[in-house]
Length: 143
Image 1 (tube, rainbow, N blue to C red):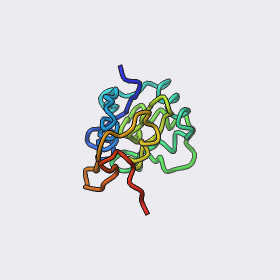
Image 2 (tube, one colour):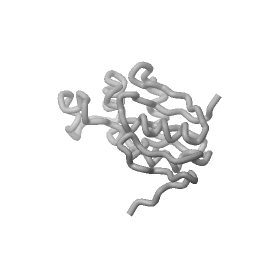
Image 3 (tube, rainbow, N blue to C red):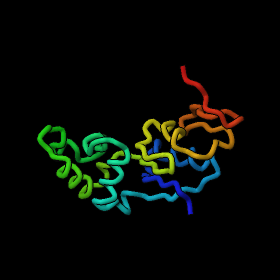
């Protein structure tokens, strides 16, 4: 079994790119489609702590009930924000990747490269055609 896990939404281009970058190392990660199988409270709290972020920093606004729930208001406690994420998993930003090198919200998708214990095995371009990895498996430098 893989020691890499991705909390994945197959409808999200960034999530698909991150999964493809993981697979480009030859690794087949454990894929958790978190909208179908949401994390429980303890798991979500553990992921937030491992990322070193607050629950608010994990909230996704776009395409979610964020505004309707009034989550832009400052008075929400961390526990209340986690409650909302558990009730509406679409509020959990993605993808979250867990490897032996750490846990991170991988936005942009290249953020996953710092978490992967194995090197890229070949060229890789994102779905939009942007080249990320060259033919030698090396990260392409951005200006």
